Image (tube, rainbow, N blue to C red):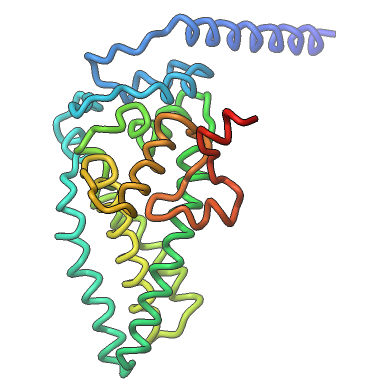
Length: 259
């Protein structure tokens, strides 16, 4: 009997706590003048709506109280090719020294770039746009990608911080090493890394560049459409290829009006 009473009490207490947390989340308002990272988790279920209401300003918010952690969240776009292109060249040169011909190297590097475009799509669609509502879920999502949707023109948070990218390189290297031969692994990895560099630089350009040619103009329009009109489609950055393959190509305004 006592066990049953305790179980009922525990259940009611859990419901009460959940209700209190929900009420707190409903009343909570983010203060944009204070560091944001540890605030957004308190939004609870309202986080998804909040993060997809963009603030168009080149001045980004502060993330952390700590100057050290704040510094790690800010990256100038040119740091990406400056840091990673020498690494790309080194990895490709390893396969060259192992006896591969130029056509073989071109094929391996090209394959790495192509695979990266799929990785880019998968990460953007299934990780960066995952729906969260818990405190830590919201906080982590905001750091990964939510901040970019909330402040899409923040020029110092458009490219991936090199320290984080270096950590992510480790599992990708070991995965390629597992699937490829010792002599082809470096060139394949180098190609994938080159694809990443192209992606990050392109991403920055789509937000801050002023293209004059039709192809980059269309790509810029396509990506900004993802930010400001249909945020659950159009996940490709460097191209719309995988959106076409997987059916996530957004409708045009004309097609929407015709419905």
